Image (tube, rainbow, N blue to C red; front, side, top):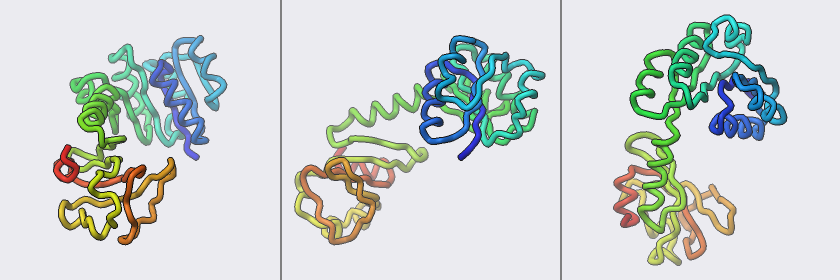
Length: 215
């Protein structure tokens, strides 16, 4: 279990708080809006109304004691930038901030943020990849080159074993798991037979995956 300081309870911050709560992490939420604080009380450990750009207020929260500080302010970039900078000055272990543009991303990384989350950019990439082929069920970008895809098993693969397909040797792609009837099996063996109704999780270079699955 980790302790997280979450600043900003707009739609983005609220979803983060709810997910952290589901994962049994402790969340201290901060927002200048009293109504947002009241709405979040059921799924955060503690909450305070305050201005995160006020150094005295931010210092009173004991930011050094949190495993991570998330700046989820989405409607006021100046406040987001100032908050990220203050958190780092006050000794925050890890500062994660939200950006809406590439320019904001650059400024945040230069002024206190250890990591930047860019939801619009990430969702756009996911949507473009997901819609580029009927085979693709899910997609996770690991870096600029490598990705994890979940894809339906191609018709011409049906009835063949992983060893027979040998896509690791032919394309440099690793099969991480096979999903059938909603259940994911990560215990992959060379004699495992693929077929209809199954999907596979593969790891590899995006270009290699596109070539292998004719995307």
